[in-house]
Image (cartoon, rainbow, N blue to C red; front, side):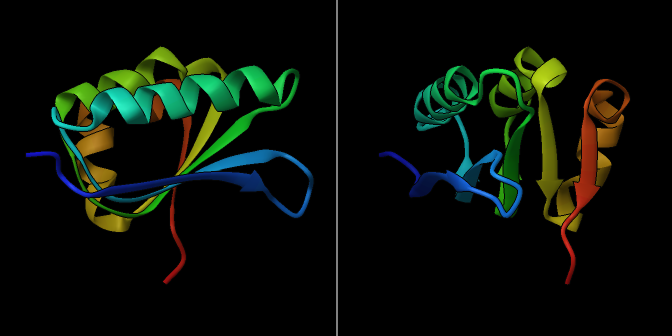
Length: 102
C-alpha cells in the first residue's frame, strides 16, 4: 500500500520554484518524491530550488538520500520535528535547512 503523499510545485514570492510536500515520505512513495524534486531542479535552472517539508512528519532514509542527491541546488524548510534527524544525517552540513515557522 502506498503511503499518502501530496506533491506540488509552485513559485515563491521571489519567483523561485518550491516543491511542497505533505504527508510521509517512505519506500512506498519515495520514487514520486525523487521525480518531483528532479523535475523541479531541471525547471529551476540557475536558481536554488526550495523543498518545503513543513507538512511532513516522517522521512525515511531513502527520502533523506534524495535530499542529499540534490543538496548543492536546494534549500529545505522542514517541520521542526525532523530537524534533529536531518542534523544527525549530516544534511544540514551540505544544504541550507531551516525550521518552518510556527
